[in-house]
Image 1: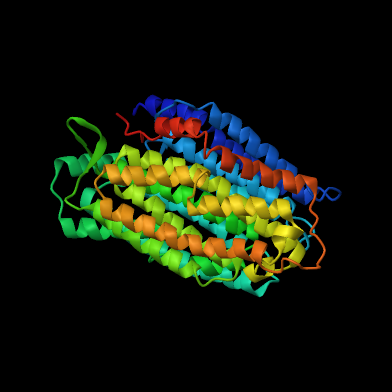
Image 2: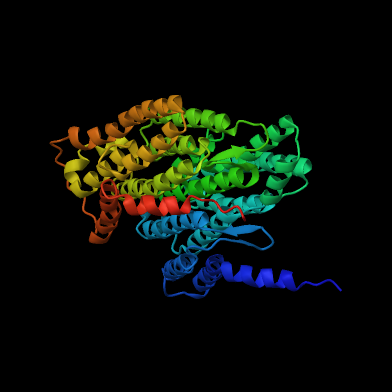
Length: 502
């Protein structure tokens, strides 16, 4: 009789490591059940979701320092994944808080139980994606998070542009999923395995035809490119970001992008990494394909098209959508160097990007609540009508540009440093030029707030102390981390080493 004791032992240990994800599943079910049975409390789902996410954070913190391959190498638990999971978790908590103050959502729905449930489901999918070390697991995780995001994008279904956004998102998602699964089948045909660790072993000891490996790799890369809004897989982004509720637009721009970058870097290092004697940081990629150059070209196209597209936008959500595409390009610069310095730079950038981008979207949401408009031209005189919000928005926009003394400057500094250390001077020059271009469309908003309608007789916009406190809670760290960034840098450096199972 076959001995299954080792399988049972692995399953039991894996379930112990799966506590954060298990908590999300329980939270998903409880949020849905409580919303259905509760007739008195409109916000029971909100509180259930918040408590569940906080408990998830506690279990996630307890995994600090662990490195383990669970569920027969389907999932990896390591410090690298933990960093991205914290970014996703913090983003989820903030977006749920934003949703509580969203007139767009609260006026359209008497209860938001399904909405909070879907956010929890999307968070669960992203947690799985961050730790996936099997191509089918990667695909399933992407589909789990995508199904929730398709519905959330069109959640305000009475708004025509929301239904359009959801439909476009589904169509582009289906196409990218089809391309990705075909690339997975090619890689499986070449190596005989779907496990990234086994693929690495096969490529290390066998010669593989370059053309099918390149074709399969590019197809899989297109699936990742779709999630991070990289050119030419970005077409859905402006329309979906404009049509979706502001809270979901903010969520997609940070959490979904973080999960996409996390799995892409894990995929390249786990499947294609070959150690170089005498160099601990550099990645010697197997397979005779210059992935450095492929990613670098994607980075240039993504940041350039994103910034040029943003120049012509008057709608704040569309402008921030193109800005999000451009930031994916900056992050791809760090990915393209394919070493641990690049991974560390991505982690640092993402943490600061989470603060400044979510902060910018929340200010846009609060202004939209009052003005019933997302047009930047309607921000005229806002610096005098709502001084605190305007100053905070200036901080977020300056940080997104990458100017000192903000956290965005530190993020870009580490990205450019990683690129220059690897000898990609031309790529750093393109990145700097793109940052200069981005300054124009960010400053245009600041100009409207402070130099247009200065003598406006319109009444001041009054916001609740709680919403002002939330904005300040994001704006102040954006400034402080521009000067005292060592803790985040140390955390990123500690988490930059992707677990290879050795």
